[in-house]
Image (tube, helix red, strand yellow):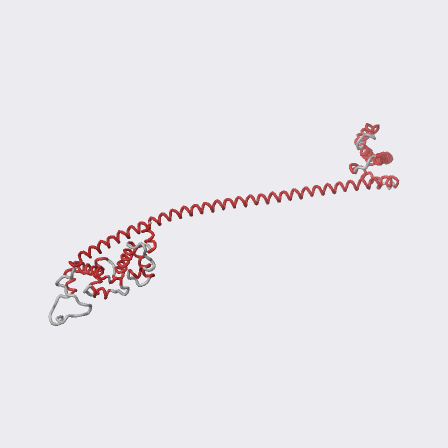
Length: 341
């Protein structure tokens, strides 16, 4: 009853100005509904009809849907055909407007939602592109740093290699100069070098006619008696033969041929080379040919490195390159390049 009193007071206050009062039909409907709930159906019908009359006289607006729709339901509950028919056209238009507005609102809402979702997707894509771009920049920076490090390392390695090659060249030239000085010395002294008068030279496995009849001191006995002095004299004689006759220019030269040229045997020649140089015959001969090739390259500006091996006694270009590299640490072309620089 308290609700009915409050609504009745509101009704009485605005009734004189009901034409100008906004939503007065809503006050009428609510007061009628309160009366209906209170059991006063007659008063309720009065307020329902007044609410209907106000709705019919006002311009159509979906904003009165909250009043016209429950008012229509009230008439339907009472089977009030007259009021139902009077209110039906207006109720239909208002309901249509209301739901159209609701639908448009929902469409607008979902359109906004779609726009927002699309914007969020674009933002995510842009963020992904930014991350990808940052990664590309980081990778590019790393690649540049690696390239710079590689360039710096390459420069340092090149300088180190250049110094190393220069050091090898200088060492090689010092060794060549020593060999050349020895060669010049031998040229001036070869007449003074010969076998000691008490040395008897025999070929390997050969015997003299007196060997069977009388004891004679052979080369081995002389070598054992004289020791290093014998082999030193023999080695100098071999060097004189190498300088005077240049048998090393023959690619077919072997220890037997050189022993015959030096008037000795293979065993003594091999021992002499080993004691005086610490190397075997093959290495010693290769060193001699390499030194002579260096001599040719040093004194001939128009030398052809691919054909000089024949002038130095090497049997093939491959052998020349291999032995030159093994003994000097440089290839022939590297040697010429260092010589020019």
